[in-house]
Image 1 (cartoon, rainbow, N blue to C red):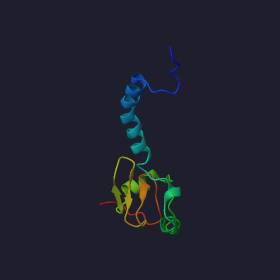
Image 2 (spheres, rainbow, N blue to C red):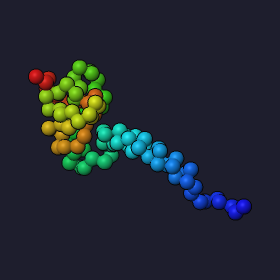
Image 3 (cartoon, rainbow, N blue to C red):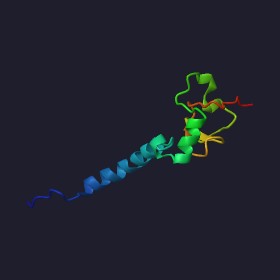
Image 4 (cartoon, rainbow, N blue to C red):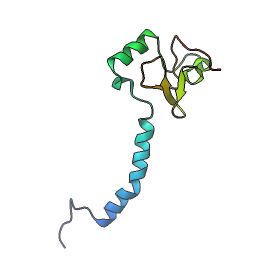
Length: 100
């Protein structure tokens, strides 16, 4: 019998196909809230000038309850004041204003 080391078998390919949706879903969840390191210099500067921090010291005054926050998911969204970019719903800045 020949040595099949390094050769993809039908069983291996079917296994990869079966887990592909799980891997893609995990990546989508992980990237739903952007890594602060990937923000542009302007976005980082705006966050610094507005005193953005995550998580918020007072959960009642978090981004998810702010008038400037637009939710994109359960725990992430966009802020009208922070020059774009995704923000976590549990963050807060000095310009927080109650929704409603």
